[in-house]
Length: 452
Image (cartoon, rainbow, N blue to C red):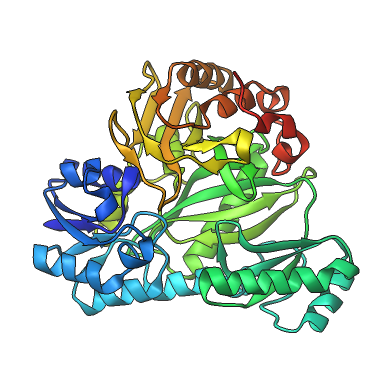
């Protein structure tokens, strides 16, 4: 087992990794920008190193500074969290080159699955269903238009190296295609340094269902059930739950088997997520694989009782998976709401500032993952996520009730948050019935205005 782990991240995920390390008896190192000097992850780590000014490109994204911080503090492993460098194969290679263990998959696995077009090709080879579209990346607008005509409009143009909803454009017809194609390429180049895109059929009312994968260095790969992430805004997940209200046992088995087949083919190591789109008629299609721990991993933790972050650390150190879950049912029902410092009435504009009052909800089956406290400053330089509220109940009805009361008793003052918006969504009849899809919020624009 490792002696000291550096966490190459900030905020709640950095705190989450610190807690897991402490339970395993491992010392920790926090890295932080000048804007995060008073952050809780800096306070609770055993050691800390300032790595630069607030902008991520000058601190959390600078590989040499993070490697140097690990070397001067004697860290023998690095946990990347999510975001920043978590899916950067060059960072993984830099860790290996410095004789530091990267807590995650190999650079080859990250590179393969990070290339969405290459991952799509692999899925096709393994008979994992994919959305009709181009077989791989395509750089000619004319060729892309021909494929779009063949599969039928509307289509979506996606960045091959994409993620987080960036580099994605929908074209409703041939007239709009050329502009959408070029816009997607430009955005992909700006966001990922790679202008390659591919074309897929645009599905009108799909659910977004993902399967949690865990693998070890001994050839074992398994899934730990699914999460439904259909409540989204601009491809950004807002609410997740497990199990999915849209799956029966047969469909869950088929999708889970497909996810494991894909991860097993590349001998995947660590935590990852295979994501699917699910049509109302039960047809499902592989979308992408995220080669890291997910923001919403607590949903699976509360639905299974397993600590995924500790398992990441164990498998990276060479231990075999400590549990088996193939074919098992998730226990009860879990729902997560992401709380952001944003103003829904102003198109979800970020709202940095100082937290003047903070009181988290509690009670049976309630968990809050956060890095905020009364008096802390939410800087304008990073993602606006400030907390994750997760509840678990014996039934979905009980979980909905717990989420409602938890949101009602969640006090954050000093900055505008999405708590009232989330409370309104939880009460919506379609959400209560479990009949939502990725276009749910687009159909209910009135929900975008914060409730009193």
